[in-house]
Image 1: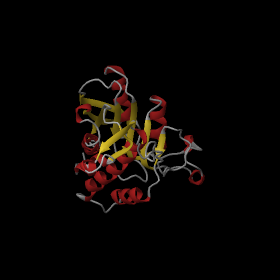
Image 2 (image 1 turned 135 degrees about the vertical axis):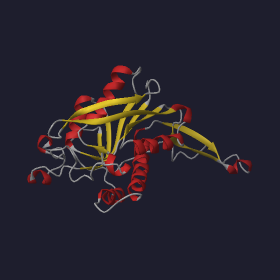
Image 3 (image 1 turned 180 degrees about the vertical axis):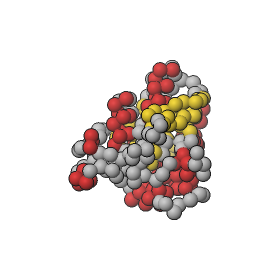
Image 4 (image 1 turned 60 degrees about the horizontal axis):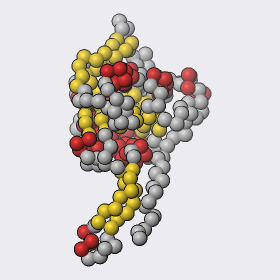
Length: 271
C-alpha cells in the first residue's frame, strides 16, 4: 500500500496563446522574460551575458524535461527505511533509461549545448547522454543578406535511433542552421530519433515557418516570440493569425527586437 497522489502527474507549461500549431511552445513566464530582457538590453555586458544565458537555459530545460521526457513509476526507499518499512517514496519520475543527444551549433549554441549536456547527465543515465558538434556559419550575398548556412566541420558521435535529439540554440532567426543540421541527421546518421526538440531563447515567425515546413514534427520551445517588424495591425492579433504578414527579421536577417548577434556577444568576438 502506498500514497497514490503522485502516481500520475499532469504538468502544464505556462504558454502564450498562438496559432503556429501544437508543436510550438512559447512560454509565458514573468521571471524568464525579465531576465531575457536584461540579457538583450544594450547596456548588458560580460560576464552578465553568459550568466544570464546559463540561468535562462536551466529554466528552459526544466520545462522541456517536465513536458517532453518519458516518465516511469518509481519507488525510492528514503533514509527513514531503517526505522519503518513505510519509508518508500512512490510516484511518477523521469525515466533515466532514455537516450539523449544534445547538438552544439557553434558559436552561439556552444554554451547552451554544454549546459544541456551537463543538466541531462544529472537526470539520465550518463552513459546514454551524448553531445554532437557542428561548426556552421551563415552564407551571405554581396548585400550581406543571409542566403543559407554552410557546415565547415562536424563531430557526430554515433546514431540517434530512439534518442531525444535536442538543439539548444539561443536565437531561432532564419531556421537555416537547424534545418541544415537536421538534414544531416536525416540523410547521413543511422536511426530515427524518438523526438526532435529545439530549445531557444527567442524565435521569429520566419523561423517557425521554415522549420515546421522543412521538418514537420519538430517540437519547438522558446521564451519569447519576436515579430517587431510586422505591420502595426498585426500586433493586435494572436500570434500566428496572420503568419505570412508577421516579420521578425531585418534585411540582414537579425531579429527585431532581438538582442544582437548572440554568437558575437557571448564570445566577445565581432567577426
